[in-house]
Amino acid sequence: MSDLTRLSLRTLRRLMISGEVRPEDVVAAFLVRAEARNSRDLSYISIGAEEALACAGRVEQAGTSGRLAGIPFSCKDVFDTVTLPTTAGSRAMQDYRPARDAQALARLRVSGAILLGKNNLHEFCYGITGANPTFGTPANPHDRHRLAGGSSSGSAVAVTNRTAMFALGTDTGGSVRVPASLCGLVGFKPTRGQISLKGVVPFCWSLDHAGILTRSCGDAADVFLAVREAQQAVSGANADHSERGNSLHGLRIGVPRGAYLDNAASDIAASVHHLIAECRRLGAQIVDVVMPDDTHVRTASLAVQLVEAFAWHRTNLQRRFDLYGEDVREGLLQGQFILAEHYVQALRLIAVKQAEVSELLKDVDVLMTPTTPVVAPPLDQKQVTLAGVVVPIGNALSHFTCLFNLTGHPALTVPIGRNGDGLPMGMQLIGKHYRDMKLLAIGAALERVGLAGWIEPNDEMDDSPGMPPPLAERRELYAH
Image 1: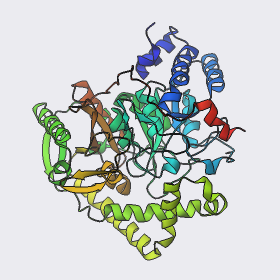
Image 2: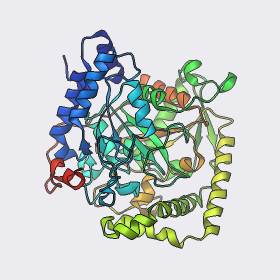
Image 3: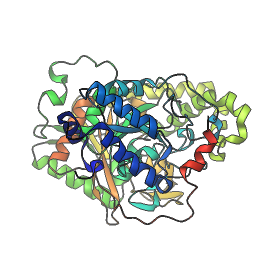
Image 4: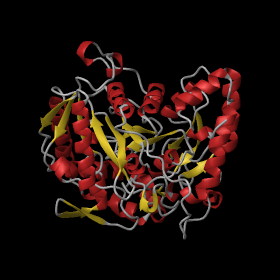
């Protein structure tokens, strides 16, 4: 049997259903790889090998009829788990012990999926770079001198490096889509509320979404069907794309002109233009659209994030001030100085932008933009120039993603090839509320015609010097 970690989710399911492969074989293959690589990859904060193998045994005894039975996965370490610590990537959570698993994990458990461990992240999700002073910063699998993106950094690295079949993350301004794009993966942020956040350490209640990182849109669809909340009623013209066929012919694709492509690096813009031309050749209708004014979008997002994050952290900051990372601590403290008036005005602007994007989507099936304006930046890069303006790297990475957290629309990033330096580039698709499966079917159609697809890294990269200590030593911080 070939390396099981290289097979697709559906292939693994077929082999387990036929009895050619046992769930224990699949879980063991991913565990061996995860434990061997983690001191270098830093994608996991904790690995629950014994429990994962025990779950695999129980799945085999119960039968492999569940949608994801026997499929190993990981999750960002903000999802509550009883068998493993929940750290949110911070020493400030060192004595937190949840009483039950997060609801999304409970749903996956019912489907037969098997949790391998908890992924590293930007501390308390407060950042898009993935930097973490306590557990180390996961490096990009395609170039260890570059960022993997965040805040779901470890989730992206685990799936890219085949130490998990899929991973759950969270996305407040791009924290699933950005690392997926920088690492060459599919990153899916469903319609807000479609994946439960019950039992998830919050960053910003109003903007948080749970999301999925996978190697393909088909895998993301299988995971979404297993984990989503109650399906919304759909009918007629609003039926899921999967019910109407999923070719590109006749698809109406809205392409924002101006800033969305002008602000992207030339190689990313060229790749998106090529993809647009190919979609037109395959029968899609390309529609020029004017996006809503985004002048105050980032300001509104930041105002809501800081107020709500400070509200959640206030008591813990008073008790454990020194256990927070300096960047997170200083950022959170700004929330106490934002006036109620500013918070309310930000919420009003969010409602306006949601209505504007929904109106725009009445005339097209999907919007198409670059996911990020730049490829993975060097680990120490602080700023980047976009259209002649110097901006912080964090603002640049979430430049095209943050609006759709405000509006709650489903958004998907798919890999569209490498730039001249061999680094992945991503394209973002945005769909109508609750048309999540349609969006994934469009992504799958792009994969099928070769316009998108997982970008596998070179598996023989040298270890980088000066990395943090191995996982076993770092886990002592959270020993029960």
